[in-house]
Image (cartoon, rainbow, N blue to C red; front, side):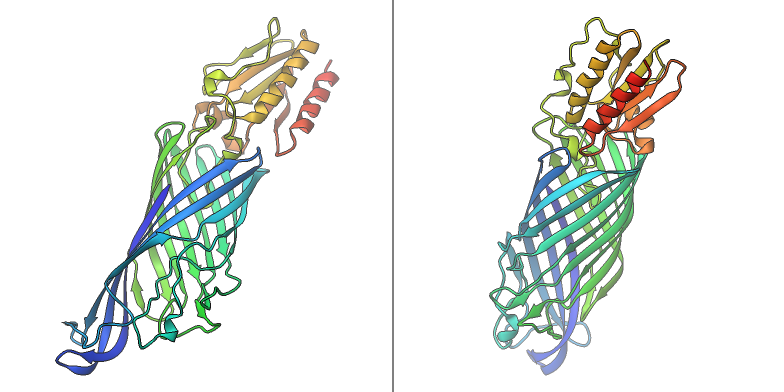
Length: 431
């Protein structure tokens, strides 16, 4: 769940009938408190694919003052037809997304695509009722809009660099003649992990094109487009394997709004996430370009302490060190040593391990298996052996009797069978 909010001050000029002063030039001084709570549900369908549902609830509170040329507050002879002291709250447009993720060399790439559902309330054409009270605040778009995002990240020890792009395209107008503006976002962020905490900072850009009513972009009111460039910073705390909290603050340093003056000091985001089903690695709260770093593995059927290893009685199979420990990888004298990096939440690891045990069973005098329980991505084992080179799970390292590295491989999405076959050929060739 994510909550975000900001305070917006906007002014624009007008000419109206003022009590005691007649027809004069005035300034509309409007204060908006905008907030949104998002409830998101993410489901891992397979090791590579996932699905998400985001339900937004929006609240917009508007307060208006009318100022004369000296900055003094004045009263209108007739109640304002454009602005009122009011609050709007309700469901926004839910977003349905599918995702696919995988490793491409040292990079993890994630593509998300989907659409929004037109459930947020929309108002009738305010420009068709200019002489009567009307409303410009929309809680939704009234249309089904395609959504697409691309994220890429690279992990280097406890540092990670990530970039993202996002767009929501509005292709047609709703039944009231309203066509919302297209939305765009992009950013780059650096993250540093410190135990159960992580800190991040970067730069983000958000943009929105002008809204249209009946195909017309009106120049006297409404959303006429904007661009914001922001410095972003925040942190996350993984309280447990299931529960994580995060806070982010985004401060605009460049703002361009078409028509009108607008001041938005900052956007504050507060989030909490809960992982259910299997026990995944310690979660991190959502952020653009960095959601579910290893989420494609986070749907195992066993708790960490309940993982059942295949029967290896009488074989040279053993665990190296305590779970999560940054152990030294020392070859077994006179044998080909298979180092198997695994975690209880990694489903493919449960397919790989029996295949490795069978190789030890077939060549008991020539092959040994040593298992390293990574536990999660904050462990010392992961920091030493996996994340510096962008390795994922399952991961295998094969060393001969002299300590020479023969193979080091991470299974790619859909490539586990090929990796097992490659390991088998190397073992058989060494006999």
